[in-house]
Length: 141
Picture 1 (cartoon, rainbow, N blue to C red):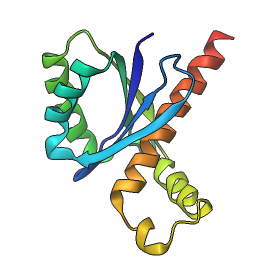
Picture 2: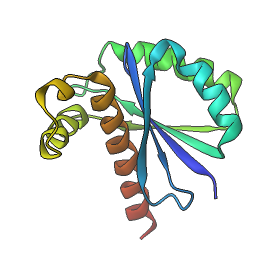
Picture 3: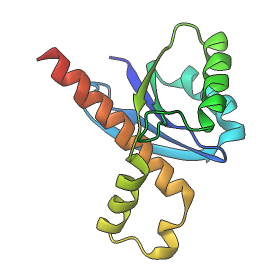
Picture 4: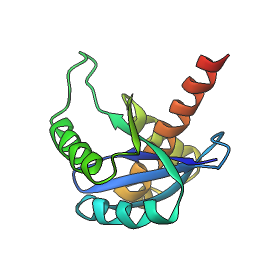
């Protein structure tokens, strides 16, 4: 079975996660500089069996889009032109950064490590993808 890739798109650092082949669980992949994201995905998609990408949809509590959404839409447009067979889904990512930060605390990470954007974005990508999988599982039942 093909895998699903999760993306927590950031201005500077983008977190990535991936499912197992049965699409039950999300695992952290890595966090990479956003300016290298497209090149990474071009190579990664050739080596992995990715059928779908889930990208976080950043919204405020007033249901308005954050400014970064413009960059995300531009990325999606470029990506779809290069990889038209890969499905892109979006998932409301409200509070994922907060949940990721609290996860880092629960894991016992020291303050110095919690400041690292790479770890925060990677955990956020896992939360986005695992939430997506949970929603899809509920829809099946």
